[in-house]
Image (tube, rainbow, N blue to C red; front, side, top):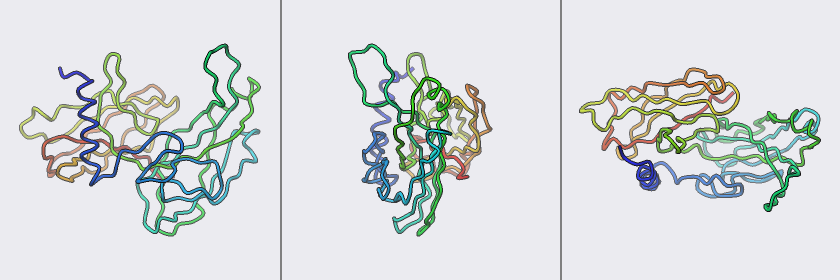
Amino acid sequence: MIPNSFLRLVAVALCAASAVSLGACASDGDGGSSGGGGRSSSDAQGALLADAVRIASIDRNAVNTEGRVRYVVDNVSGADQEDLTWSVSFLFPPRQVESDISVAEESETTSERSLVMLRGDAGKVLDATCAAFNERRAAGQAVIGTRLRVAKNEPAFPMARSAGSPGTRFLNKLEMVAVSNIEDASDPTELVLEFENISGSKASELEVQAVFPRSGMRTKWRALPAAGAGQRTRAVLDLRGVNIGDRQFLVKVRQQDL
């Protein structure tokens, strides 16, 4: 069996090799680059995120009564945007615990959702609710801020969970737990991917696709059956008619834009 450490090195190399055709691997850090540059997250009206979306307005009137915030965004990129995701972090003061490490704030972040905007679209409403709001409020903690994050939904190297090593995670919802081996098949016709819902709530309206960066080919999007918290879901991707090249592939998961 190939060690996961080696496979992760391959993942980094593959992601770098596919950057020309698929875009560079995005940073997950707040304020870091995503989608070719620009801030990925902000709490300020007027901020430009992922070089594509500008925050037009923010409504936090219900943030400390219902744990809810509303962002309104505009597409200012001059192009259609079909591969963006968004999430919101709700910021709280740190809990009073004995520790040598001090933090300025703690955050509760929503699952990522797809953000699809045509060129020139304006006034897109993004409503977010903090799942842990009631628990935090019961502990005497008030929301001290929110932060919207917009990023490119880049395909990722598929790494199944193994002992002591987590699998690849998608949209803060799914962790890969199994992937079929197409390396040894002489003429593979399908690719089986299995995920576990790690979000703590129901995961639905999700689709998955495999991307073969060497040939530039992609499978058709395949719907993933809904899965409750802790449950697993799987999809079988049809490889017939797809030039799979050297059989190195990436996986992309998206959620229907509701």
